[in-house]
Image (cartoon, rainbow, N blue to C red; front, side, top):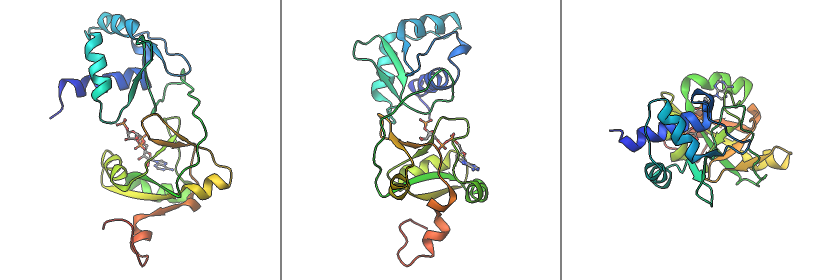
Length: 194
Ligand code: HQG
């Protein structure tokens, strides 16, 4: 059952990733917002949250979605933005040979044709392990895991980034670097569970 802190985490995701303007909050291009402004503007819009609760949510969030600045005054979501006011610049990082993307079976035909697109978010999100990809895919329906030839892409000039919470990001993935679970289970040594 979702806890009160889960609910606050959802609210913070909504404001800090997607709709800061819904409460009139300013984010800078790195995604930072003043915590005092967040608290005041939230209260103006009927949601009372105190600083200690925000700190607890940031500290205990299992996906480490948020970060508080060293001086304790600002907060941001580390990845997952759709708002145009944020344009985070992540350092380019060499990825491991393979990364994984979890999606729903109904998207696979389109992904095979067009590759992975960032859609509303600023990046395609990838994980280092299959189990994370499965849980990401489940959010959309019947999950399927895609295996991405990340290092090969990087060697060909595609850029990869890693957010502070270890989520891997890239701009897009063309179809030729993607294998689906069906292709994998037909190989001699499948890497993924059936
Ligand atoms: C799909 C969560 C059709 C893509 C997770 C995905 C993640 C296509 C959906 C983070 C496509 C977008 C991001 C194409 C991509 N045709 N469908 N060409 N290209 N798609 O939610 O990766 O809990 O924007 O496969 O853990 O599911 O929010 O992206 O299914 O890290 O912190 O379009 O969100 O983190 O969905 O999830 P999303 P995502 P949080």
